[in-house]
Image 1 (cartoon, rainbow, N blue to C red):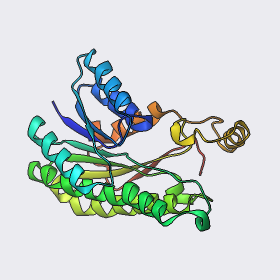
Image 2 (image 1 turned 180 degrees about the vertical axis):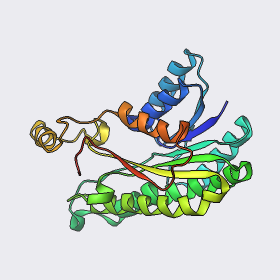
Image 3 (image 1 turned 30 degrees about the vertical axis):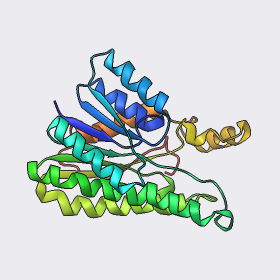
Length: 242
């Protein structure tokens, strides 16, 4: 049984990824920053379906916590076949109103934590000469979003990191790809008013928000096959930034 580690797996896109892959026969370990009840509920739900799922409370900005997670998952499951770097936070505000604390939180969680977790997992994959890394960026990492400048910068960094690591790991049998969700119906967009939501839907050619499950299916494509695909950036956005 192949093992997948998903960061930020208790809600939203991460939760959908955990469920989708667990039901397809993978052993799935996931991290979460808060929401003990949500994490326990997800593990219990999948356990009742005879899926192998483990939850680890670890902030993506905490380097020591991430190291402990990788060590334990690798020890328990005999390695890590795939890594889904999904954990992220968002702050919506003009840059001049964004505190230094928020800037640090955005960069340490969305970019630095992703880099550190990848660094921790890389030796496990290169030693077995196989592995799949899927980084979750955002369409804002491509086009930028007003009042989300630091978030956009971090997500743009994820795209650049993906391309660099794809080249670095190619001869080691490890692929590295990136998924850029558009406007997805998750808690991260729960702050939108009905008016804002309708305006956004009108900008999306498909005419609606995406679902976490639709993003999960795309992530699974990179994990379950796509052996000759690396360094790619795939938007799951309903045509939003075409």
